[in-house]
Length: 347
Image 1 (tube, rainbow, N blue to C red):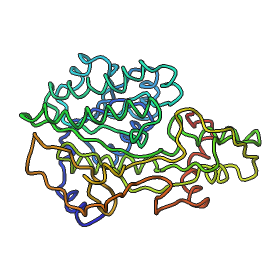
Image 2 (image 1 turned 45 degrees about the horizontal axis):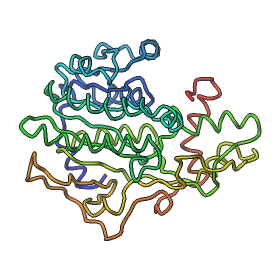
Image 3 (image 1 turned 45 degrees about the vertical axis):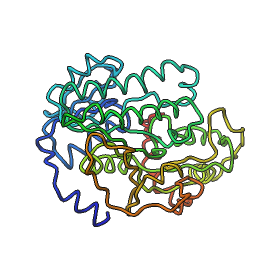
């Protein structure tokens, strides 16, 4: 952590008096966020907002049954339910989304209803309920999107940032976190490769493919840090390593045959976390980039410590300066090996 970031975190946000609501709270991120918050921050209350009663029940019987946890069944497509759930809430972490690329391609309006209209509902409900901070999770696929999922997340990002204009006369502020693939999350390639390993054959779409990678724990801690320092309107981008997908396959199944099946529609060879156009309005810190809001109608004296980026700079998975080799990848996937052997890995 840089000196700048340390000074911010040392302001000591009073987490023990915060009421937090997380949309998509029963997902991979939501469960890890809840686990870490209970262990490290002990907030006054965490509200798990999701639409699946079975997943909420499974989460409770798995040990998430502390007295400061609440479970709300609801869909982010339902603004009235969101408004009810956000009553008395201080912080919203918006993690709910349809994120499977093929599913979004086949069901485009469902992706629009959840990722765009649902996000709009979250933002509007937070403003109506007087929520202080809303941090939304985004993805590298929102940068120069090549598929519908990325397109919906790009629109969602714009909605989040520009909603600060509507909230200018209130205390509500909105920001985004944008990061790459989360190792072992639902829909991740890691569970797929572990399952394929048993057959002795792993399929990848292109042996040139690269991706940004981070663990769930890294993602959660980054989100917590960004909540502490957000002023409103930022897109926070962590500095994280890249890996070659073929190296990931070799790390998981070194003896398996690797079949190249061809790149799928909507799939990129490499991912972008920061475009050269965005970089002109961004600053760099030791562990992150911050894309500044294009205009601050809600607050005109916002200052972002950090160094400007050189002309033409972009942050892409193939030109990254930090890489995971096969041994580095193994450190990330070891926990999922154990879950897979125990039959507890979510695909």
